Amino acid sequence: MEGLHAEAPVHTYKILLVGEGNVGKTAYVRKWARGEFIEMYDPTLGVVVQPVKHDGILYNVWDCAGVKEFSGRGDHSYAGADGAIVMFDLTDVRSYESCGAWVDKVREMAGDIPIVLCGNKCDMEGQMDIDAIALHREKGLTAYYSVSAKNNYNLEKPVVTLADALG
Image (tube, rainbow, N blue to C red; front, side, top):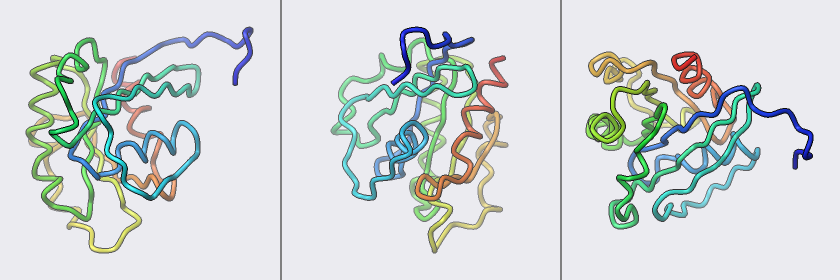
């Protein structure tokens, strides 16, 4: 834990983390924030805010439930967001196909904020064809990254890209 005299962050950003259930959103933010990886799927209930400090920036990552029956009335969580990560599972094409609706919801609820598309689980077999991933271009998103919460691959790139877009 940082002491009372720890340097204050230069910027603080509210980042939404959305996508279908079981795509690895919580695993992603937990690995990035705490260095922990838990393989067992435990659905997020509502919204869990995870603060992550990186390079003088405080990211308040709002990990939103992807399973409709656990999301509650979480639409208010989108208000005031500075940026968003829309995540899907590279081994589950249906989770990718739903990303357009997640992007639309973010834009409807949070306005025109930078959005990064992330394909998680790039360490696993049976991934969809990378050339089929075009939503970020079709919807004018800020960027696309393949990530692995398990192997720590590209974990910082989505949020650093969002910070650069907000900078």
